[in-house]
Structures are given as C-alpha cells and as structure tokens.
Amino acid sequence: MTALAISTEHGRGTARLTDTIATLSQELERIRVLGLKVEQTICAIAVRSAIDSAVVAELQHLDVLIQHIAALRDFSEQVAVECSDDAKIDLEAALDRVTLADVRRRLAHEGANDRQDNWEVL
Image (cartoon, rainbow, N blue to C red; front, top):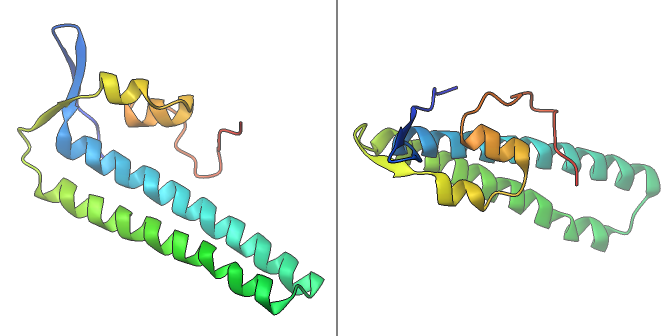
C-alpha cells in the first residue's frame, strides 16, 4: 500500500495527488472483490434453486459491473503512475463527502483496518 503523504497547510489537509489516486484505485479493488463474492453467492443460489435462465441472464449485469470497476481500477492505477510527484490536492472537502467512516479513514490514510473482509455495513 502506498503511504499517503498528508500535511497540513493553512489548517487544511493536503496530499500528493498520485497517492490519493492510488488509494482510490485500492478502494475500487476492494469493491471489485466484494462484487465477486456477491456474484459467487448469487450463482450458487441460482444453481441450487434452478432459477429461470432469463433471471440468470439478467445477473450478467453484475459481471459487467465488476468488469467496469476493474477497468476504473486499472485506469486510476495508471493515472497515479503518470501524476507528477509534486502535484498536491486538498482532501478536506472531498473527504467530507464520504459518509462511510472506514472508507473516509482509508482515503485519508488514517490507519484504518485494511482487511478485505472488514466491510462497514449500513
């Protein structure tokens, strides 16, 4: 995991843009893995329940969603590599929009638990 360099400048939290984008990429991977778990569970239920093939075909939307998340993860990883190390971003306003505390802590790199199976449930 990339160490996010956060400093305070005039009382506001700033971080390197490259680190922020890399952390975002890691969050996308977390939700992709969760999507895979959900997909596996639904498929297992579908097999056991002999669900109608039309319903199973609709479940393909979940696979498309997981692929979309993977594409965004890959894109953001590359953008992080391409960013200048000197570019900084003020995270305060962006972090204020994140309502899930664990996600907010990870995006701010405040040492939250990074286990993949430690999901915040509403």
